[in-house]
Length: 255
Image (cartoon, rainbow, N blue to C red; front, side):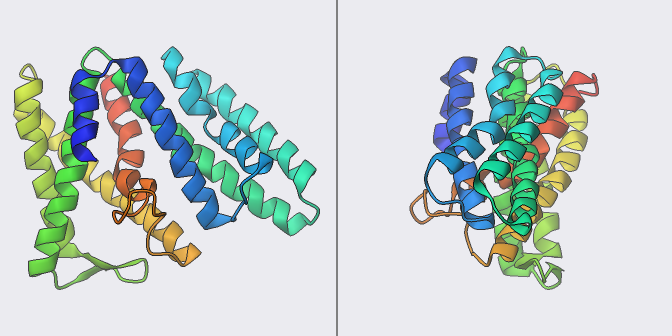
């Protein structure tokens, strides 16, 4: 999967990337709603996903100021759906909470990934971000397996250790610098390293956020769509939260 992602960023046009991310968002939202409130297949699920995915759809216009209006439209849509399909107040509150969070956690975060791709060096920065998350996952696994002693958040994710987290941060940051030196030679390796350290820390937060959702839902993986590799959300959890951070680093001129 990682290789296909890299090929898409290296050779695929920005519009194709947007289409792929839209498909990823749809699959991720299907997993999310199946885990959280178990919406059955049908018109209600389709309508809910359509409103949740709205920020990703408008990201193609490359105007982040549209996100606020889009999220408001999504909120109105969720209210209308809840009034149409739900009869008990408790169910309405549950639906409104999970759907609104989904619009922020999945819809809005993935929309920033699309915004990055449309930037002049967006594909290169997304490859740096991929290095942060993929390198971090690999480093955390091997260091945690061989040297992990202290649990990071045992109540949320029993397998994660402090040593693994440190190893993941260093591995992801070093790999990001290597990718940055190859694709972004005009940027200082030190600047990329510092940015990668911050993104690695944020990636851990994203990983733990999905672990909270899965722990609350009582499932090990978000889904089975990737045939033995978990679900779509399991593959992108670290990038969900880091993509907006990277975008605003670039947009504000920090990078």
